[in-house]
Length: 177
Image (cartoon, rainbow, N blue to C red; front, side, top):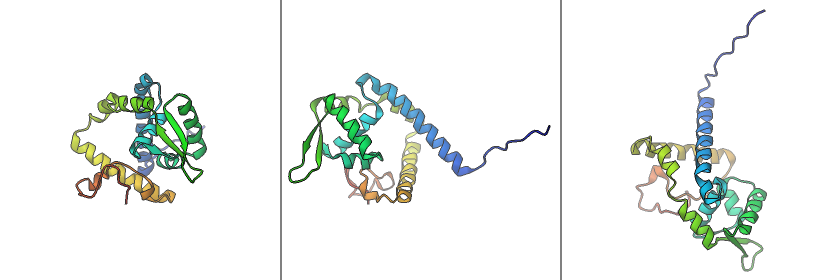
């Protein structure tokens, strides 16, 4: 009986995708373990970050857009977070839109989770220059993926474009242009 020889996949782009996906998943699991002490998971931490990054308030639609999640998933998570006292909801005057704000408890958990030792241990294996290069390269890949999805870059907020960090007009909460 003839043996079938399976050739290794030499697709450079697929290999990069697998490495990126495995890295993200491994870091996410490590972050999950680290965040358990605050009784939150990375998804809830991301929502707290998004609200804080949006001057302390956001809407479910903005959160879903920022985190690349379906609105119904974000809405369900927000309901649970409100029951746990992490956020408060209020109606926007003159609109049917809901405003989400951090409660004192939510702000406290957010602030406690800022200095994530796991992230530092993982990323510090790279020297500062390589971390800066990694951030710049990931920014480029992220923006290309947004273009592929038809999502305008200006819809997504992020602290700084590492490729243009030295520009005077680039501020901490500027929308990407």
